[in-house]
Image (cartoon, rainbow, N blue to C red; front, side, top):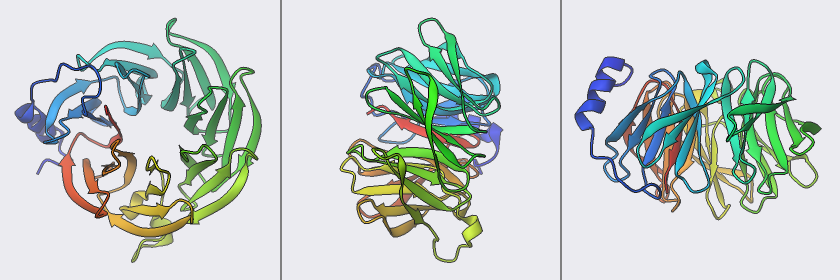
Length: 327
């Protein structure tokens, strides 16, 4: 059995290693960060077989492409760094210094900056990409995690897990300007495509808190409880939205389900059974396929969005954290 056994996982990787596509972007390649095996696995979008096993610094977690998708940045929590992967070569070509224990981050390509949440120092580090230097540390509540940057780059939103807060930060002034109280242990963000709302998962509250961005105030919440589950098992973390803004998908952690939500009605339409402790989630660009990282199952569940059914489980590395797609 491959799941949960590192030696067999890497044997599996070697056995299915394929030829790397030469294109630098829009390859459709699927990248999965694995916290415990210290790698990013690259999967073929058609066969879901491993194309490349990219070794990284320790504990890779959040990942983001730059604007032209020639580079993939990966936060590596145990080495206090962000690794830079060349998307054409599928190899690490650089490393940026961060503060202690980086988890999630946002890239401002126009200003050549990265904003990264550092859990242990309770700060957001502002990194100058070209200089490879932290140019500012912005103080936040305890254990910042989720990071979301406005389209114009002027406003940054950050969750404080311990403070049960979402901070609004003026990026030019480099300081918190407003706070709003949300559900217990807020984790990650998704913005509605019209830009009006921020959805924030609250892990220990078992809900999503919805923030009106114009007012920067709580506008509602959505609670979850899959059939047969205890409320204490419901620990939402990841959230993804379709590009038309009609449907959201929320991973429910220890409840081992993904919730399907009608965004306008703020109503749960159903639940999809996935693997153990799903957290990371992403949609393919055509909104037809949903990918879910099951952190305690060492696999990725593939969901057909139209039928709302899990169609396949793909073994990956140990403790998969996140998924991004070059599409």
